[in-house]
Amino acid sequence: MRRVRAYIGLGANVGEAEATLARAVRTLASLPGVRLRAVSRLYLTKPVGVVDQPDFHNAVVALDVPQGPDPETGALALLIALKAMERAFGRHAGQRWGPRELDLDLLLFGRHRIRAERPIAARSSDPAERSEEHPLEVPHPAARKRLFVLAPLADLAPGLVPPSWGETVRSAHRRRERIEGPDAVRPIARWDGRRWRRG
Picture 1 (cartoon, rainbow, N blue to C red):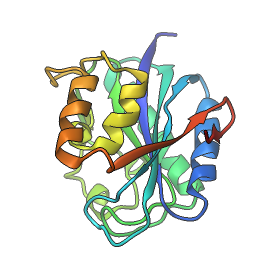
Picture 2 (cartoon, rainbow, N blue to C red; picture 1 turned 90 degrees about the vertical axis):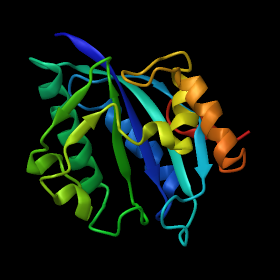
Picture 3 (cartoon, rainbow, N blue to C red; picture 1 turned 30 degrees about the vertical axis):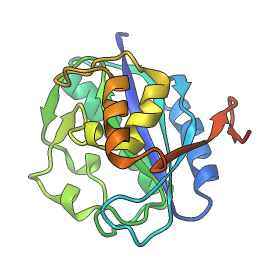
């Protein structure tokens, strides 16, 4: 079975967010055909868009996943699994950029560029994603503009140049940090194989 390295962004700010993300990492590692390769540090981040809400906890994981018969099919299969996980963790319809029980984003799928219509099972409860006009795009189109994605992604793959970026993850991270400031995203814990540990 051919595999591809996928990077998944995780976020939560409802309830015990740190424990939720640790459970999510373990659940991702148990998906059929998936191998967990690396977990970033855990970050505490200021909310974007809707600022009147608790800070988020964010991280990124690297997974080796089945590519499927073609990259589009493999990426959509992974996305369907991610959205099913969100629902299983209690995510429900809410405002865009609002509080999240669990948010899972497919950031990168190998070196592939993908644009595909999302089947119903690959859509979240967000109003924007329920629309047929919200396709799956890989690399994630907003990743380069989100420090809460770039900081943990730089933990795992600083020298990676994602398709269409024209720069490394490290470079994009530094550029975005200059815009948002060093306090917008703060590392608070490291992964020990089962959970994040402080200090």
